[in-house]
Figure 1 (cartoon, one colour):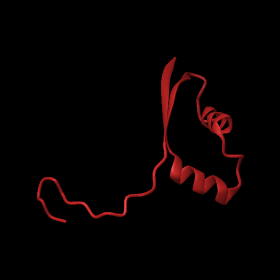
Figure 2 (figure 1 turned 120 degrees about the vertical axis):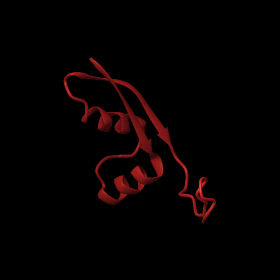
Figure 3 (figure 1 turned 180 degrees about the vertical axis):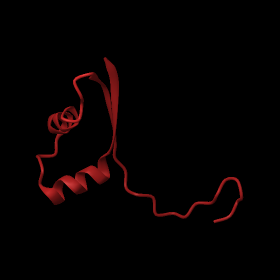
Figure 4 (figure 1 turned 90 degrees about the horizontal axis):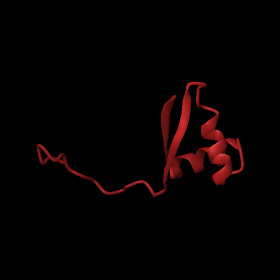
Length: 67
């Protein structure tokens, strides 16, 4: 069996789930949603969930130092 990890961007996922009204947005339903994408040969290892607002600041290229 292959171990599978899901990385969820909570800000984006919450916005889409509320927009599409696909399911009630809570932990057990997020887990069930992820499990739907596993194949028979996969096993769930972990779900990483992070939630933060999008960055509004401008950054620079670390190599060229240009904006």
